[in-house]
Structure formats: C-alpha cells, structure tokens
Image (cartoon, rainbow, N blue to C red; front, top):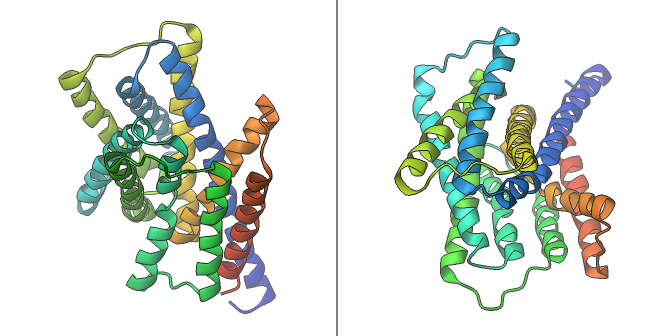
Length: 298
C-alpha cells in the first residue's frame, strides 16, 4: 500500500467517496425547498414524509431490479433495519417539533452536532481514532456553522432543545447502524428498507392522527415528487460515500450542507450575508479541507 500506484488508487477511492457526499449534500439542499412547495399547496409533514417514502421505495426498487441486485435483507440485519426505521421517524418528529418550538437556526445548529457525536463514539470505541488536530478542525467547523446560521440563545425552550437533541441523536443512530447494513447489502437496498419502514410508521401515524392532505396545485405535486427524489439522492449517495470513507469522515463532510444551502440562496435568490457569516463560510470550508486532508494522510 506504500507504492505510488497504491496511493493513487486510494486517492481515487477517497475522491469518489467525497463526490458521493457532495451529491448527497446537493440532495439535502433541495429537501426543505420541495417540501415547502407541497406545504404551501395544502399538504403537511405526515403526508410529505409518507409520500416520499412510497416514492423512494418504488424508485430504489426499480433501480435495484434494473441493476440485477438482490433485494434480500439478511436475517441478521432485520433488527438493524428496524432500528434505522424507528430512528428515521423520530428524526422527522424531532426536527419539525424543534423548528416550531425554538429558533430555526438554533435547531439546525444542534442537529449538525451529530458528526462530532459520531466522531467521539468511533474514537473511543476504537473504530476510527482521530488526531488532536482533527478535533481542533472539527470544533472550528462547528464554530463556523454558528456564524453562518447566526444562532442566538434568547428565550430557549427546554422542550425545543430536547426535540432538536432527539433529531440529532436519531441522525447518529441512522448513520452508525445503516452504514453496517449498507456494507452488506449496498446503499440501494439498505435505503429501500429504510424507506419502507418510513412508509409503515408514517402510514400508521396518518391513520391514527391525521389525514392524507394531497397538494392542491401542480406546483405542489411537483414539490412532493421532487422531495421524494431529493430524499433518494441524499440518503443513497450518503451511504455510498460512507461505505468508502467510514461513518466519521462521511458525517463530517455533511457539515458542508448549510454553507451549500446558503450558496444556492445567494446564487438563486440574491441572498446577502454579513461579514461574520462570510467568516463562517471560510472557517467551515478550510476546516473541512484540513480535516479531510489529515484523514487521507493517515
């Protein structure tokens, strides 16, 4: 592995993993936008979550069949898959509950602490030990996100903080557990099952607590379909990248998502940013670059 040819092969594999995660980040950027289109057309959270699960299950199954990939889930992974499904449902409940209870920027900031929690878990479990410099760059990335989001801590609701923490911890569980499933089945199949569990849980929730509120306009239906496609792209690409780079590196790279969303807002909607926010952009980009460089140099 010390030969130049082996080093180039490793670099190429790492580059593919990073490319998957950038693709995943692009999908994540479109999730709230497409969901908003559906909401403004008369839909709601439960309907969107259920519908995207149905669409994702169908699309991913079709792709897997076209690729002649087995859809079988090994018996030993059923419990893992169920845990991922439950965590996915808790994530939706937690993040939407937090957003309506506390400041959105604070909720998002708490959510994006999940890569550091994964890093701590994998470091002390021995799965992926980080250098001191990597911890420093990771913390600087979180600081940069704080500047970008402009999070403030006035009138904090403990319920809202708890719901944001629930969403964050659910992200940790989804990442760590579904990576194990994806290592055996591949990213497509692992996400088919995650989507199917979402259909089951949100379908039951619709029957028990709500009703299917379909969009009332063609733009709303477009948003609903787009949300399902963005959901597929974001999760499949994430776990494809995580199979290559590992859970910690993959999760850390997802911290590019808030700056990426802000970049899209700047390019498409002419969003303006303050000097502290520009500092945040620079801090996140430099810190993630240095974190990833140190990971490759090991």
